[in-house]
Image 1 (cartoon, rainbow over the protein chains, first blue to last red):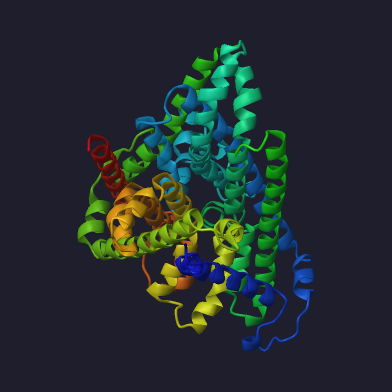
Image 2 (image 1 turned 30 degrees about the vertical axis):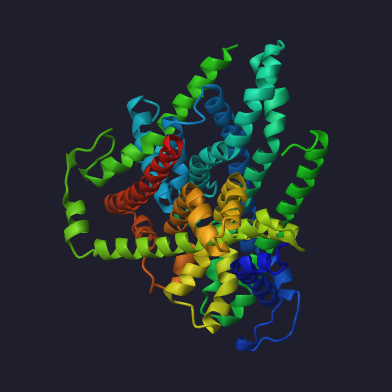
Length: 289
Length: 266
């Protein structure tokens, strides 16, 4: 009855999008292997990958980006799931409070950087409050979170945006579980926390894991926040890669692309890990998604 | 141990304060004249920066117009891709369907920075680098996965029954789609468009790289002010940036709300 080519026609724009992504990945890989005919580079080699892994700058950038991504994604997922539970249990899965929680999701990263600067800098609001309360007598005593190696300000900025993102992302699944199975457990005598940890949390895990993956990859490949809130040495990996990419020395291009290649490989590896974990999880909980 | 309800209430309270506090401080900074250490509140207030922005040489109206036009184009196109893709995967069986399902997740797995640096050479060859079309393309990649997800959910909920009935009654497939299914999809279409809009509106890196300075957006103008440490100006630009984004977002929300109400009373 349905003509077989109709879905392919409908998918044409989607295929164009896919093609663009695949072409981009192809370009990154090819250039990272040293193949850029326009610059007179035509031999395929792994030397650029080997070379970047010898660079102190690259290694510390990799470490910085992994740390930002892991810390912000882990904390955001845990706190976001907790926030989600609070929303569900306090009857706020709809309504005004939810609009408030969605606000940070809508905020551009650059604006969040402004927030963090006005609160966490050594002359920011928190330092002023600490002074007023007598914890510090000079602004230099306030812990430096901006423009430092610990990238604390960038992590704080990601958390501000991503905790609500996780809560919103998990909300639909968790509210349906909590109102059925979670409440059933409580009616059968389980304490509210036991019902949370043994029923609602494990069954909400697929959505939480997916949110973790999305924000991990986003923070790992993110540019604005570490660029605006971080220090110059060490840089975050995408910032380092972009610097090499825009270098006037054209022969630096393969190094930039090797760094992008590393970002790409680690992101895809994380996605693979996610796929394996989800499969295992689905087996354990009987295939609910 | 604290009772669970009290604990959860406390979490919501902390969340609310953490979300509103930076916004309040931002609004304060945007009208601050002098705010010396260690005062908790500004010493003097001024409207100078706001005046400069709206009536000075900043050309804010142009900037707003170009940002909004760009984001609107992206929102529209990403939603069209979402509608068509959702229709294909929800209503048809075909070879490679699982590939499409996985593929729609792919843009989230390739960081935007890597994608932009990888695609630039191709866009240069196509003559699309430093053009609005090029920027639309890279913004689309960021928006499409979310629009597909939203449209797939709504398409599934609406189903195909009504459209088939219209066709049984003699409507052609296009009439049936545009007159029956599209109105039913409208709330979903609006939320997909508002998502696409916000995603494009907040892009920075891809606009910088692919737009090459030719395509001007609020994000592009704001970032240098943050870099230079000008708190008053970065606050003012942020207020305009966020204010316009929220205005448009809540306009969409109000429309969706209105449509859904109408649905109930019909």
